[in-house]
Image 1: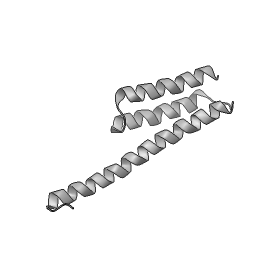
Image 2: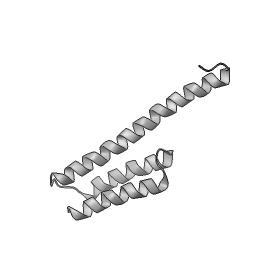
Image 3: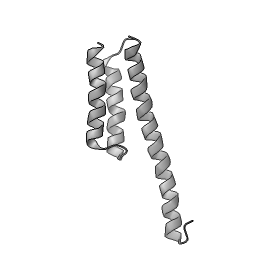
Length: 86
């Protein structure tokens, strides 16, 4: 348990950031999964769908949820599935 006033504030801030990070990561994972399921079911997938996935991944990278090369790897994987199942 935090003792000092600043430690209490830091603990509160940590919980807020943890919640925010979890939401961003969940949003990214769900968007990627939704896109992949569409492709596997041979549904019509547009470049706009891929753009939405990129947008979510880039936002996570900007906020600091994932690192730069991790984001590039995820985007590359999504593009590869988009181009092969076209």
